[in-house]
Image (cartoon, rainbow, N blue to C red):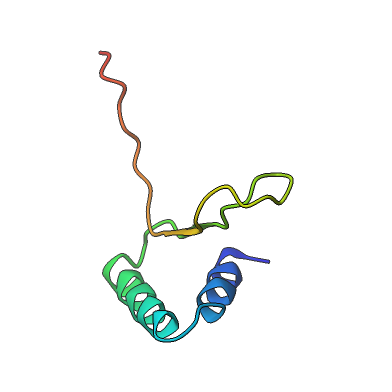
Length: 68
């Protein structure tokens, strides 16, 4: 399943009013950052155990380690 479908499935799995609010926020983020790197983490480890909350991301950044 591609990232867009994973995000759509996750949002649709949420109860109202959270679902509508998440969908509105997702659309706003896509409009504000149209070229951002879209990503989704489902919160499960490689064994399928839930280890964190799911996350939707709209970009990436590399943080320098402070060494020159």
